[in-house]
Image (spheres, rainbow, N blue to C red):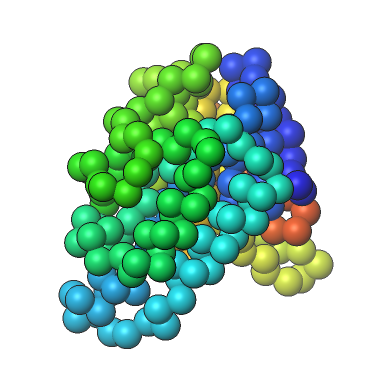
Length: 225
């Protein structure tokens, strides 16, 4: 697996190029914001038609990460579905695919703002999950320490040799970690956005996703309160 190692609360974590997080000592794989069913919800709400391939692409990448890591635990960190109606409208092929991925391991669905209530797709449903000193939740708690969350879909933009590179990214400091969105049709919030600037400490770093995950200092924007 291609990844970048870093520590949080004394625990070694690996940010994978796919946008998944690997917690090796616990054999735990974590992904956030799959937003399965986004194309269906967009069409249902009159927002236009999107190619309905996002679930296949998202699950294929997740399957590849699971095959490479062989996790004992998979944590889906909220907003796994674009809304509850999307979860209920999943094609049988997708439901069967999810059940195959769940087989032989613990699978935990963390509640998100798009999917706040349990769904009948196997696994265990939790508002948050504590593993040692770390707490997995969907939205970062500004008053908490050592939490791992998603929700914001952080995205970095860098000028490399005159070429602008924009990629989903992990954000981390000594207090928290925010995962990028894993879903294919999810957008991103720039790392200079006030919401992210106010959450992260001055020494925060971003780890860009892609073939070779690389850390960069998170820029501090004037919008920070």
